[in-house]
Length: 113
Length: 113
Image (cartoon, rainbow over all chains, first blue to last red; front, side):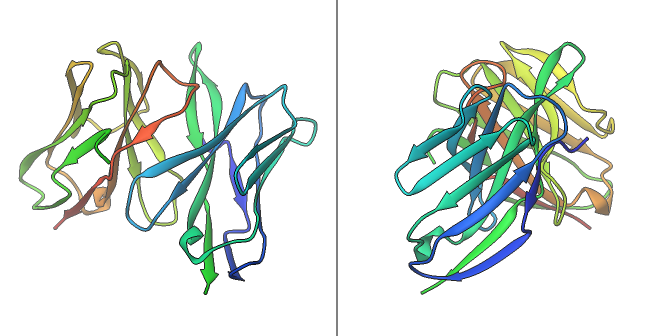
């Protein structure tokens, strides 16, 4: 079953602009992660935010988590052409006594130089 | 991409063939995963091995058969596949069983003809 759902599905911006993408999920979580995937390649971990955290920064990335709304956002500031990729959120979904990683469909970001 | 490697990178096979995908991680991790990524679908978790023991089988058809001979190697044996099995197959590893940061390989692009 799908836990995380990213929004928008696609985003096209100019270099230097900020990009914001959102993730909504359905059940309670322990943590939420964001990943990036360049076309046809493996995913690269960007940031993990725990359920007791509200905001986290890593370089030009800012992630927020609102557990009351079951949503998270990823902000990329001062975007570059190299940020062009798909971005996925992953949450932990309870399954048979353990937690399994569940990904959304992703947001496809295009940054025009 | 020396952390998690996958071979082959591309594979074309007929529906009656038998082939295997290989994944190797050089990170000293204890958990390894197989994912299937199809166009416009969320990343699907297929199998998880933690300390060489299979933890989760996500109702994957029996034509996919995983093997984990040790904590560094993971195989996905394929036989009598269907065209809808064409996808990018991604291997990942993590220090311990999820939740936690996963490291992905570059993937094997599989085409079933």
